Image (cartoon, rainbow, N blue to C red):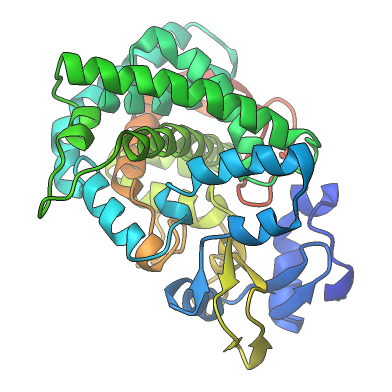
Length: 406
């Protein structure tokens, strides 16, 4: 496939629906190039992506340049969003990133997953048991969305009845954070959602101060290291990140993984027969069509990638999707293989911003597919999914399935 890199528009519905031929062609012909539709450089090779994500020459703090270009009411809204999102470790460079990530890591380490495992499986059973008599289901609404929302709610002491309202705010915020170009008023919607979200979480933290509870909200309140402690705003904004990211990415991991199994029924049946292969399958879901598709970095100084000079403040878009389909790294990368071994993919990113919630996402993914494959077989996609116009993620609006009990 011949690709003219300068004409590739990543907002094109065809590119959104079928990105693999496009990124494969770019990787072969112009692996690191300036893309006018993005207004930045675009990296497709595994090694180039890894270099950018590991390099101290690049920053994740991207709101400063955006604020400089904003005026009027739009600037006022962006200032509020920049204040809240600027406290997220995903948009923070060291030393602030190092300090806040250290405070947040308790509860998300692999060793913490053992205690959480029974609770996650209980949530899986709670959601899947009512579906056992169904023949058709919209999986995202019935299972993929509520499962991670419930689990993150359990971790931070959020009452289950409050989860649906938080999801509405999270969806609105996601349109802004993830580059939803088909939502022209996404800044206003995100601004309103952040106000409601932070007010709710302020109340949650205040309630924990009055009545301490054994959860991660309380951990952030009680955190002390060398005399350092988190402010109320830092606590609230950090919980907001965990609630939003913990729900969005894992929901997409589950949905995209189910689509892969529906298109490879023999592999689904093999996993149902031998569930010991599910951990490897989850890693392949993350590689083949993971929820994180593109990350953005900003050059802190004049630098170079793949022999190409990069000027200070220029953006570099690194395609995790393309890196995870790089034939120099993976054998037959366009083929889904649930039993793929030595699968050192880029699904959770790389470097100091490697996803903090990766152990939790793996646990939820494994529990979700154990529950699904124990109950249902012969997944069939009823209608082709509508892939959202979100540059950063790979996600469908809905997933309509037909299945039958095993």
